[in-house]
Image (cartoon, rainbow, N blue to C red; front, side, top):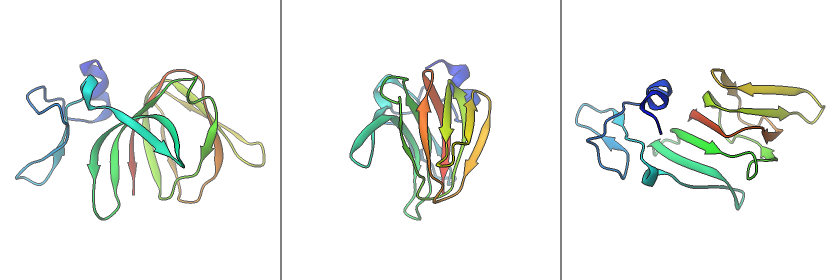
Length: 135
């Protein structure tokens, strides 16, 4: 991933950090370095839905990181966050369609927040990446 994409995500791009990813330092904050090896498959309801690079996986339930998916594997799947899902789209386009047919365009540069229990159908239009916080 290009350094400008990492900078746009708000992550601290630190090539000197271990490729394994996340580091909680003595000052109490997390930072991470994104490499080709730091992505892992992401599964939801037993189905692989993209890849994820974790920044935080707190015991209190907050998680954050980068998520990416392509238009083929992300063609269509249920979107139903278990907690509030707030994210900034770094690249790509997607669409959410609610049960009553309302369509929400999700585009690069946009910042979105959906509450726990929100339900829609997610459709990925182009290769997509977001920085997310679920809490």
